[in-house]
Image 1 (cartoon, one colour):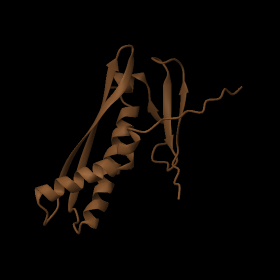
Image 2 (cartoon, one colour; image 1 turned 180 degrees about the vertical axis):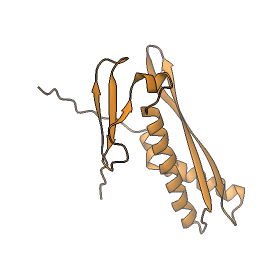
Image 3 (cartoon, helix red, strand yellow; image 1 turned 180 degrees about the horizontal axis):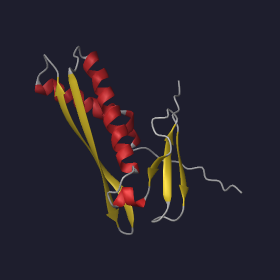
Length: 143
C-alpha cells in the first residue's frame, strides 16, 4: 500500500523580497507564510528546515513508540526535539545534520535496552531514511 501525502507552496517575487505560503493536504498549514526573512533573519513565519525538523521528530517518536510496544514497553512520556542544521557551503546552502534529542519516561527498561530500541527506531524512521534518499524532480513550465 502506497500512502501519498501532499503539501504545496505558492511564491511571488524575488528571492530576498518575495513571499511564500505553505499549505498542507491535512489543512494543518493553510497559506502559512514563509520567506527569506523567516528563514535567514529570524522573522515570523516558517522555513523549510523547521518543517523538516518537525517531520523528523514526529516520525522518529512514533517509530519509537511502535518499537517500544514490540519490545513489551510503553512510554509514559516521549519528548523529542530535532535540530536541523542549515550550513552555507560555498555559494549555496546544505542541510548538514538533523540532531534528535529524546527525553523519555518508560517504566521497566534499562538504559542499554532503551538505547538499542531508540537507535533502531532512528534507523527505521521513514524521515531518517528520506534524509539519505534520492530526490527526483519533474519540472514543467506553464503559460
